[in-house]
Each structure stands twice: as C-alpha cells, then as structure tokens.
Image (cartoon, rainbow, N blue to C red; front, side, top):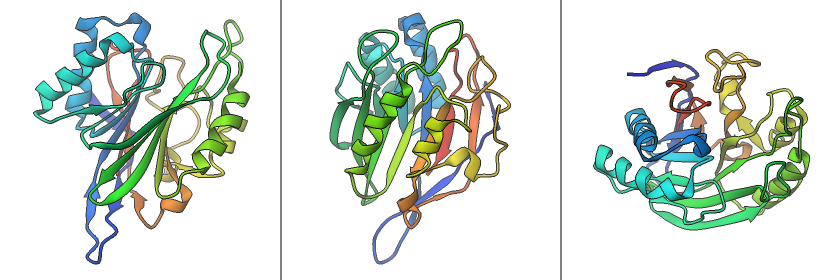
Length: 252
C-alpha cells in the first residue's frame, strides 16, 4: 500500500446556511501519463484513486477511451456513483458529487499537437456551489523543456476563470516551478494550498514527478476564504510504474 507523504492539505468547506457545518471533501490532481496506459494499468490507477478517498479528481493525460474503465472501477471499488465531465478533448473531472454544469475552453497552442484545453464543472457540495477547473499547461520539447506556449495558455485561462463568481478550485499539471511567471500569474487570484500549509517551496520531497519537482498544483480562490479553509496537504507516494507523476491531495 502506498504511503501518504508530507504534502497534507486539508480544507474545510463551510456550507452557507444559518447553522454552518464544516464538510470535508478530498480532492486529487494526478497526471496519468495516458499515452502509456491500457485497461490493466488504468484499473491499477483507479485502485490508487479509490484508496486515496478522493471525492473530486482532476485528471491530466487521461486516455478518453479508458474513461469508462476508470469510472466503472471507481464505482466498483468505492460503492459510490461517480460523475465525469463529458468531454473527450479536455482534461476530465471525476467526482462523487453530481455536476450541475460543465464546459470546456480552448486555451491556445500546444507544442505537442492539438490545442491545450481546460474544463470547468460546477458541483453542489452540501449546498455550496463550487466551480472546479482542471487543465494541463504546455511545455516545450527536449532537450530544453522550455515554456512552449504556456504564456499564451495562462493569458487565455485566467480571464475566463474570472468570469465565474463564488468559491473556486483550480487543479492541474502546470508544468511550472513554484517561483515562475506562470504560477505568479495564477497566484494573483488563487492560493497554492501546498505553500499555504507551511510545506517547503521548491522541489518537494517526494517529488510529484520524476524530474524531482512539483509541476502539479491544487489552488483555491482567494475570495473563497470565508467558505474554504485550508488545513493540510500531501502527495501520495505511488509507484512510478503507475505514472511519471504522483497524486497531489487536498481535503476541503
């Protein structure tokens, strides 16, 4: 069984009612390295997701043909109904909460093929409507592994997300170090839950991918503080056989 290692982020979601009740919701962001997956490995990844207790999961590089496998395995393993955003051309959001709204957005060019995209789903969590965004920003090719079209991606996605009111979560593979321009732009509107919980910045230990850095993030909107309260965060020490990334976790 994989160990939970130092990246704990716990967020308390407070329902907007006369008698406010804190509801704990577990969120995961994980790049599945989908091009390398088949039905057998997808089932192994679904087991990792189920064992984590995640209730909202933002996937990157999820092979569209394997979405039914992930969904059916999650339902079999957890005994719960799982809902998934209905887009094959955008990063999927899986959740145990019904998705009130869903849409995808083209966020510009991609070094590796078709344009980069982002997904938005609106979830009703204990009476609180929360918009969840998921994306995978661009990265240049080898050997430099430079910015690619990441600046263009950020220039499109940030204004789009600002058009939605209320508490927001923004998850994904940002392909960016914590002290770079792209994360600084995101942090104008969002708080990085990893740094918010006094985890060390820079190269996290364990890393969330094999390059010994943390390109994977879970952000909460700055204007959500009265509704979402971050307590702790963590990375799951999953096998590198499952993916070249490790899952980033947050409880909200």
